[in-house]
Image (cartoon, rainbow, N blue to C red; front, side):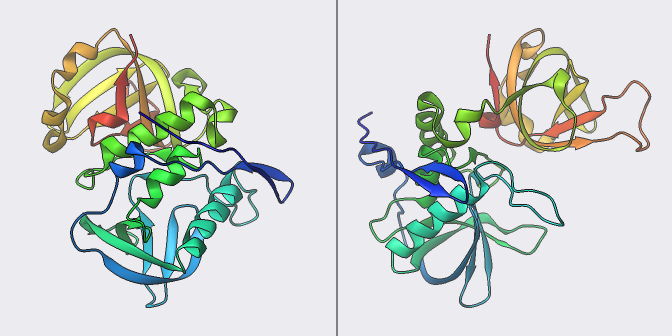
Length: 263
C-alpha cells in the first residue's frame, strides 16, 4: 500500500496535533460511489459530529473521536485536535460535503448516521483515522466501509500518530470506569444462551454478541483460552440487579472487526 504522509505540528490550546496527508490506494478504497447528498455544514460539533445548515445533526459512521469535556469535566486528550482537523477538512471543501446515510439512518439520540465525503470523493472518516484523530468502530448494520476504515486506522497505529501516541490499550483487569475502551484480555470461557454469545474474560469483563450478529463471527467458541483485543463501549454493571457471579463490566460488539484474536 503506497502512502504519502506528511507530518505537521501545530499548537492547539497547549497541545500538538499531527496533520497527515494520506493519498493513493488507501483512500481510494473509501471513495464515495453512487449518489451522494450534497449538504452544507453549519458547525463542526466535535471530531465525529456535524451540524448541517438544515438543522440535522450527523454522527459520522466508523469513527469515534475523544470526547470534549462537558459539565465541568476536562476534554479527553486529542479531542480538540480531532475537532479542529475535521473543521479543516470541512473548510477545505467549501463547507460542503457529500453524505451517504447508513443502512440504519438514525441513532437513538435522533442523530443521522452517515459517511461524509470531500469533493474529491475521498472519505473524511478514513482521513481522520489514518491521521490518528480517533478510533475505528463498526456497529452493524452500518459496516459497508469497515474494512477500509480499519486499514486507515492501522496506518496511524503502526506509526504512533495522534491517539496512538498515548498507549490507549487497557488490560481488562485495569478497568476502572465505563465508556469507550480498547481492551486486551484472555478468554476464560465462551457460553451461549437465549441472550446470545458471551465471552467471559479475566477482569472481570464479559463480551456480548447478540444471536442476530453471531454468525458473522464464525467459530467464536475457538477463542476460549486465547488472548483477544475487543473494543467498544464498556458498561459498568455494579449496583445493578445481576447474578453475584456475573462480571461487573460488559462490552457489546456487533461486528467481528471489533474483536481480534491476538495469539
